[in-house]
Amino acid sequence: MALSGGADSTALLCLFLEICPQLDLELAVAHLNHGFRGRESEADAEFVRSLAAGCHLPCIVEKLPPPERPRRGNAEAWAREQRYRFLQRIGDSLGARRIALGHTRNDQAETVLLRLLRGSGSLGLAAIPVSRGDRFIRPLLSIEREDLRTYLRSRGVGWREDASNRDLRFSRNRVRHELIPWLEKAFNPGIVEVLARTAENLRGDAESLDWLVGELAGRQADRSEGRISWRRSWLNTLPPGLRSHLVRHAVATLDPGKPVLKKQVDAVLELLQDRKSGKSIRVGRIEASREFDRLLFRELPASPSVDSYRFPLGIPGQVRLHQAGLVFETYLNQGSSGRPLLDRWEIYLSPQALARGLEVRSWQAGDAYQPLGSLRPKKIKELFLRKRIGLRARAGWPVVTCSGKIVCAGGFPVAAGAEWRRSSQASVKVVIEERALESGRNPAALSE
Image (cartoon, rainbow, N blue to C red; front, side, top):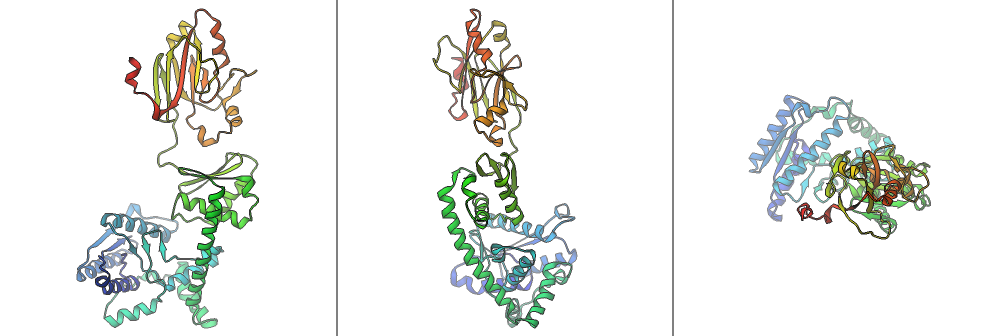
């Protein structure tokens, strides 16, 4: 469990100590010292160590080094993210099935008001869930903060007070110490319970809607590993609110636990109205893009995008393009396939060109050649558009050149000039084959 040393998490520890023997639970505590408050932060960490030692519990305390602390921006959000990463890592190392957090009903009420003031929709107003994913749980979410303090006093247990919790420069503190007391006095003494109940009701509605959206999305989506897409024409027939939920559903499916801001949803939906294909919006590790008549969501790889490459291609010889996941192989051949293929090209080279060999490289902006059967040279970008090949799929697209001139490009016909040379008695026919890297033969077999 997460133990800050404050009243809420200290009360959670005491409650767990009461029920652990009955439920046969093993308990450990973890504390992350952000170092924001100097000696006070150090005193919090020492309090946690002492409390855990007195309870004979394993205790992990870590401190973030100064370079990892933000100098500007939202320090609260940064600290929260660091805590979750720390707790996830410690939970993994201990093999913990659950990680308990000390959020209370008051935290829930404050979050509802903060999001209402920010203009959140129904999902945002559902505020703090009882659980986050399959691991994080919040057992105190239905209990008010003062009840926990009363419980600790009755047991003679002390706790730490964080002085920054009274700093009115923070919006949550202004809501806690000014807005909620005013609402209790002027409108409803039970406003905390009312706000928490509102969040609970909206959470139920949100979960029901999530299920319905999932059913609808599943029937219309085109899915593959790390990708989800829907037809733009179908999406535009839906009410705007439902389109927004589909965007959130796609991101949540590909990157569970990633919060999506309304402005991000709106930016993604603007792609549907844009006349041009190819634009994209990034939401964390997910990229949303317009690919012709589809709105595509894809998980971005951890590694950078495909870099440009350039390799000599011997005759005979083989190049394994790990960047593009392909194998290019060449060999001399006197026969003919009898039909044009887009992954097997027959070219005719003069003895001089044969000696210079070929080169396989990634395509570049401005690349053009005249495909067999075409009346004029065409840019490869134009061929991409005709075959509706999206921007991301074009990265690292292979072309084969001879003396700097393109003789073929992946998925497209051989160059007309290379084909014309078949009439020359002195020319030599070379076959170039392209196939998926996984099915490539062992390079040693080429020398046989």
